[in-house]
Image 1 (tube, one colour):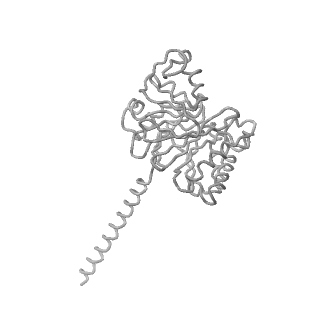
Image 2 (tube, rainbow, N blue to C red):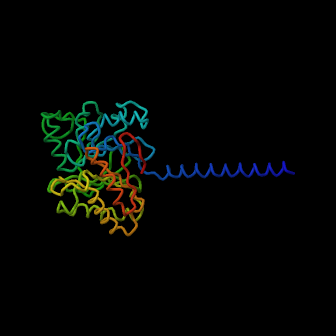
Image 3 (cartoon, rainbow, N blue to C red):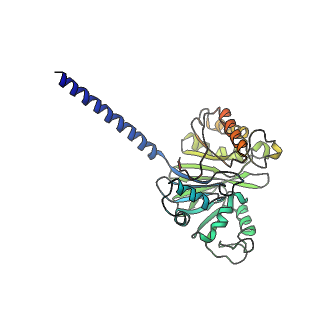
Length: 328
């Protein structure tokens, strides 16, 4: 009798363990299934380390069809990703085959130097930018004087490796070979100098990447409010999977020395504007990926502390790590 009861008890425990394993496996699988984008940061800082400047690979989940969002650092970031087992192919294969194109938010060197330096080793692909940004790259970088013209437009002798495609603001554009689209929005980066935000779509899901930007209050602009208004329906419908946005300085930085950048205080002010538009509680657990942290290290520590202390919206603040994949 005791043996029979013990056998039944063991069977019950085994079934319980099996159920738990199935539940955990299903939960993990479900989380992976729900991911819409794979992101590999090639560079996450705003200076001064040239091996770790703004550049983020983004692709539809479970593909290697990446677009590079800005390109401050490319090769060093690829090598770091290989070191961390994010990629298991050569740096050349990632550069030439995985990266299908580049979206450049503005032509400051910490956002384009990797594109320029790696262009001789790269394969043919498209570089996307707004008209003002593209003009700066053509006239000041790919001009046959500062650097060979690897594009198909601009001064000198175009080598036609890159197709330079100008983005019209607010118009959805197909990203060649990447199974994604992009819509560009203007940002103010020391008014009247423009930067760009890119709204990336894969199927019915979206990710929003902002290049360098100052707050509307300091820039005397409505660009951020207009951007928040545009993405509000996506927040309400749970289609926007995350926002990449910069925080360059701690709160102690005076407004006159922000130079078109954000602090934790100004970021939270802007996110409150977004929540007001999308509805109370709409940003709870929403992913905010912090970009463009500027050294020294003590400033970065302070920025992280201030963001944590001021996070009254309950957003999920993510500090990306160079070479380490994250899912949205």
